[in-house]
Image (cartoon, rainbow, N blue to C red; front, side, top):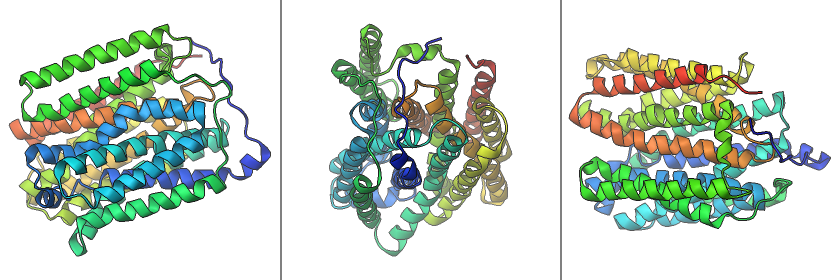
Length: 453
């Protein structure tokens, strides 16, 4: 077991009084990021028509922000702990706002996708630094459990609100308007944060791990590009080369981190049972829940001939329940790993209810399945947010959040790709069975891995 050599600087009295404000700003930023993340899910046809995007372009319209998020989460979390969480948070929020404003103005597919990637990079800074700010403002104990539970609840609320906002604005105005609105809120958050939120960082600072940053960014970018391009044919030589390049870059990253005295990601953390459970739980959540659910509105529009707004409603029910359950998860007894296991089992149960509900006559069963799965998702969001901080050394909360969110969005991207393949080559039932099995395997791992000292 690796014992922590880093101590988090305890909040000063003035910082304790600002803790509620820090929590509000952190949660508002998470809500904004998740709303933006889901913006294209129900408006892809409109965006594709306006930008002239083909099938591959539409794939990148959805996955652009995922690439930016997953490739830089861990990097942003480490930078926040070492160079100032508020500084990284504000810088990321400004990048996010500028990229949103520009994204609403461009007229080509490539510029739009590049700006979605930039939004993801800014969002990575916002998510990881906000969790670090919360971990510093709320010492370990019931107050932190409440705060991280609220942060996790915003993930569900953002997913619930995003498709509705996007579909509504696209119907009554234009799909571009949503990005300008997000940019305005981003600028507001960036403007008020320096005045209201105190700066914080780890007591023991690490020097910038340039080789680690470079190899991790290259490896994850190649991996996510390979997953995205694989939808158009997994056997193509270029896809194989991308996967091979990703494997080499990530192997070099691991070798670098093992040799450094102060690595960006201490690989010995994988000796910690809690860190293993947090990482696997986040990966399975992305793979079998976020990835699968993200593609269902498109399926409903194509197979059940629902409107953009109609396809968003069951998705909103699922995410809304996730929000409500996350808000109350702190009242539940037991360790976080048991909540993760229960959440994955409930998600699998929801998918079981949806089996066979593939036509308009079975919409009621779809809603019932979304209801059950939403409860499970709420448990997961709250427990993962809490365990992401508790499973790493004190003072490295942003890094812990970055590692956890990297696993989540890496799983999400892969989950969307595999969902497209399964639903394109098999059936809705085959996809449901696959994600059910994945959730149950994740639940078994969460229970089987015993907590450390």
